[in-house]
Length: 451
Ligand code: MG
Image: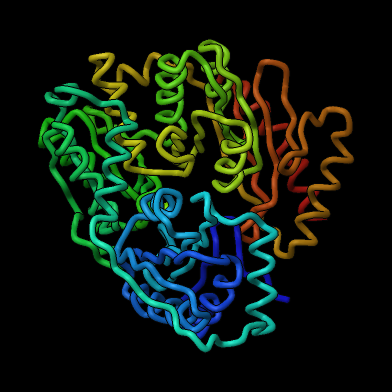
């Protein structure tokens, strides 16, 4: 039976891996997971998303289930609405930041978080065996008004921004031609920011810049921040669950820095609490949790593990090094608009520019490297070999193999869930510590992968 779900739902090239028949079969299969209630369906701005939505909806309707259409919508908004409305589950059609020829599906459980692995397997089995019968009674399709407003209201409420806190803040939002153009500029303006937008037309070809917000793609945003004399630049990916930030000097910061800042603020305001982060996160996250009386919970790499662990442990905050921030009081999923609100709140509360705020946080040196490794079985063997060789030095096997080196740093080697790669992550307290770690472990990984 083919495995369809990866670390981020189903993804593939349209016309090759996924097509309208695939969407239809997915609709039929997803219907079996949910007994009653409607299924909320939304999509990103890709050219193929509308066609896939029609196929998916036809499948759901054919099983006698109702479809609640949310139309164009960011992933975190659809996830929130599944929890908040009478819908029993949801599907969002998106390939996040992948190039335009891709598309995909995220299936959302009734708690508003992506379905667990057991339900993914059930869908895979049903799709493979076409294990359904068409219902005599056709479902109904609704397009309720005001869904996005409900989401924006919760964002504003749970951000805790009151009065004129944001009145002096000038923000440039680079929507990257994605669906966050529907939410972030609006909510920031409603909370009193002066907002300048760029790439705010929804365009499935991502004409303005590549859809993944990475420092090398954000030169345009840096320039506009400087030209406009703005306090902050925000850049989203195609489905609006991630945000990367540019400070007032035009410098782009990677997501681990802004997550550390938000962690510091949230734990201070909350007087402690649990924070969930994957096992490849910076030592800064651990040190801030210790300083603010918080408790850190580590998970495997992947946003679904962060969300599910947050629900299970009652955590207040989650974060990933790629710019994902999960804020439980609103909803424990990765949300780029919420991330922007929390970063702005930290700036406004402390009356400080972003460059200074980030400069106050502990700073270490990180490296990521990749090693080609084709089949899953080979990846597994490489990790097992490394684990045997490192023996008692291994400190965690939660995801791959991790070794902590006293206070000097750590190294993690794990198989990629989406690419033919084994990844090495390392961090050092100083630059010398980091190069020491890499000198020692790089040859070991090369040997384990190549052997
Ligand atoms: Mg995304």
